[in-house]
Image: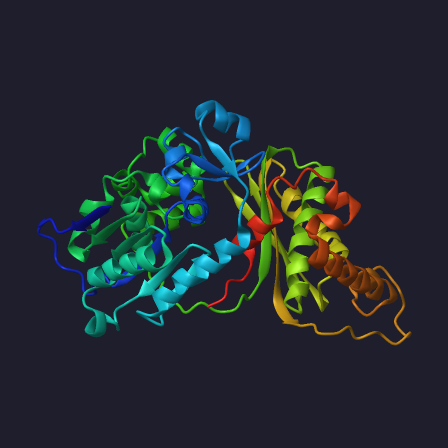
Amino acid sequence: MKTNVCSTSIGRVRAASSATILHADLDAFYASVEQLLDPTLSGQPIAVGGGVVLAASYEARAYGVRGGMSSWRARQLCPSIEFVSGHFHEYQRLGDAVMAVFYDFTPLVERISIDEGFLDVAGAVHLFGSPRSIAVSIRERVRDEIGLPVSVGVARTKHLAKVASQVAKPDGLVVVEPEDERAFLDPLPVGLIWGVGRVTEEILHQAGIDTIGQLSATDSSILEHLVGKASGAKLGSLSVNIDPRRVGRSQGAKSVGAQSALGPRLPTPGLVRETLGYLADRVAARLRAANQAGKTISVRVRFAHLQSVTRSLTLPAPVSATLTLAEVATQPADAAISDHPNERKITLLAVSVSNLSNENSLQLELPLCPDGDDAERRPGSETGAARWGADRSVDAIRKKFGRAAVGYAGILLSDAHRVPEEFRELAEHPLPE
């Protein structure tokens, strides 16, 4: 186990607020659950998945095995690796159990994925001791009661708490006091900043910016030139730990979305249509499962040079039909791509639906509205009603026989199904409190 409390004396004025925000992140969660369920796998290099590595244990990571890697490459790097199929219901159950432990210490818990969350313990110190003591207790309880390792970072801001938890991995605790923030951050690699992916990290590396300290010393105009105005301003702020976001209670989803990493790929009409169809199928099914529909459809396109562009379209009536969502999504997607003719390749497409409302039943239209071009978009039209009924039949069959049992041919036969739907749903479903 790793425990580190930054307490160096560097002569800085103590910040007005104290380190009361925790970021708790379960270590190698999916692989750790498999090792918990089957003790013979404990300490062994394992991977969850089949043709593709969905998650790898730390023992496998030591050989260079990473999520998203093909199974043949993983076996090349680690001949002794054992692949296991995922126990998706156990992931959800155990993830919920860990969150229940968090709530025993504070009501201010913000769950950001199935296996991680933020806690604000400022109001709990009079009951449970210092933030560090609370973090120690949480780690002990999660280990003793649930059997999983969890790393915790404690800091003054959400961003720094998350960075600290990554430094604490595996199975550790790092506390960063306000007066030690820069001494802690400056030597760390820029890749630890929240939101810096491989592409951004490589761009910064090419510019000679490898550490967070170097990033904080870089002029804002240079950062904006490298990664864009919005991203440059955000990275500059985070590099000096300016992060005003507070921990908020987990709430029901205000939107439902899904995304697919592609590339880099040429944005051919076929690729865009196929990917949007696949994403629409996932989003629409989740809307219907929650008896929801939405008016605003947003599409995000990420280009090869990092820039992400979002275009939205708001309909007169909320929709939840798979085909309708797929068809509507092509309009903002095409607009985003055509507005950037100099960007030859895209790396990601995402679809989300917001402006949600309940949809427990379908209100049919009176036969007074002309069909027109928008008939397919109107849920109560003849076409819309047929799609509404077909989708619910698909949902019923999938519920009984599995998602792959039935679906639209263009979606089922596409090559987008590289990751099991259960795995995607764990990451994308609105999570219970």
